[in-house]
Image (tube, rainbow, N blue to C red; front, side, top):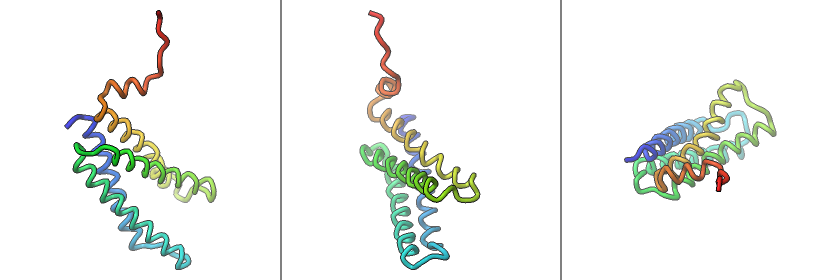
Amino acid sequence: MTVSQRVVQVCLFLVAAIAMTGGTLQMFLGQPDTSPRLDNVHRFMAGVYFSTGVISLWAAWTIRDQGTLVYLLALGVLLAGVGRLVSISRVGLPEPHAVWLGYLIPELLLPVVIVIAHYASTHGAAAVAAVAAPALPSST
């Protein structure tokens, strides 16, 4: 296994642990002090959250065989972070601020790490360097 594959694998195991733990917790807690409609939607999304964790666990376990699925999982994590940003912009940052920022920052950074490492593992480190570095004008 290459180093870049190991990086993707560790990131996906982390996503799996967070999603499966969070999904389980939210399934049992529900949405306290709310309407039946909101509690229903909350528990439904908890199931989606948990199942995304299961898919991430499987993708991490079989990382050598994975392709597009890794990019789609990274997109899902990024969109979750974007959803959190939209919520913060609409209704504010929940208390305690540090906890919610502690959720948000990895949701925005982890997908970038996953995409770069997975691209490196499938296309080689030189391809990543070529994509990441701006084109320099030639001296000729």
